[in-house]
Length: 228
Image (cartoon, rainbow, N blue to C red):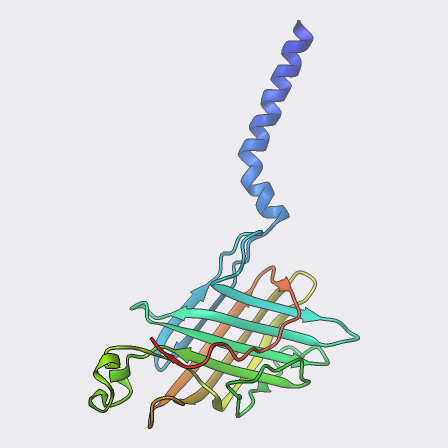
């Protein structure tokens, strides 16, 4: 009987320890992705973070990398960032090259990005784009538009980077910790509304990625321009 009581006490003690340490142990074994991106968009601070759990899909935060000495290095960000008034942008950054970048090396973005093209692991491919969602009255004279769409928004992605670069300040490819800086200026010309040109200035960009997924990806064109 005493032996049974002793085993019971041991069992309760183990259960207590496991219960109290469950969260810490789980986070050690499966660390969360605490990555973030921040920058100034047209003079306003924008920020987006990812606190994805270990088994949760990265629907609202996407940052990953891939490296193989015999193949290539890729790094991609596809992330919603928000202003203080909750206005949002979708920022896209992509790096693809056949060698590992040096810390502090500036890689300059391509001047033109085709809106209907996916960039499939092209060597020395550096791409930046930002998608915005302005009301039509913010970018054109709505009196020239059909009344049914005058209060709607436009979803439009930049296709021309006039300036800019990305550089890495930390590249820990073993643990998936990657930090860096970026900035660029870009333009989008509407294909569905005449005369609409959206200019975006992205400055003081900074990102930190922790425990990133190792996944070989590339820049994708995304959804076509729409009115919604």
